[in-house]
Image 1 (cartoon, one colour):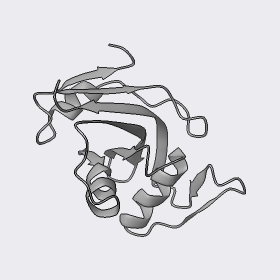
Image 2 (tube, one colour):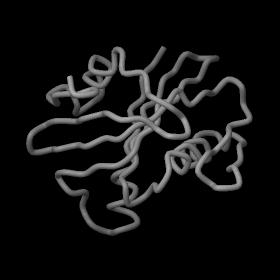
Image 3 (cartoon, one colour):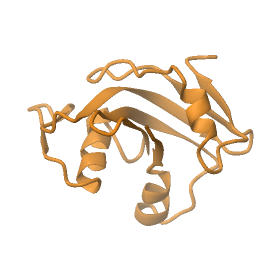
Length: 139
């Protein structure tokens, strides 16, 4: 099993907005697992880039192997057609680079609550995140 931390902040700020990412930023995230490999992905997207959690799911799967799926009629849910992949849940995030904190909380209306167990330790293994205080659901 491998943990992957994906943050679309640089994609949005550097490429689309053409400005450096702010020191404090926030948005939505989804937690995804590949059952065939047991790989877990925590995928963050700034609020300016993703209105719905479904937008993050669609972007992740189109950028990672072009895995097929489709939106529902309201376009607030993206269904993946590959049974090896599952969106476990989602929530909201805030990163504060000056105070070295990342906060994860809430839940996705469409994908449900994320699994916070072990996330602090997993995030601490990510390059550049070892010095961050990780707050999951207020703890």
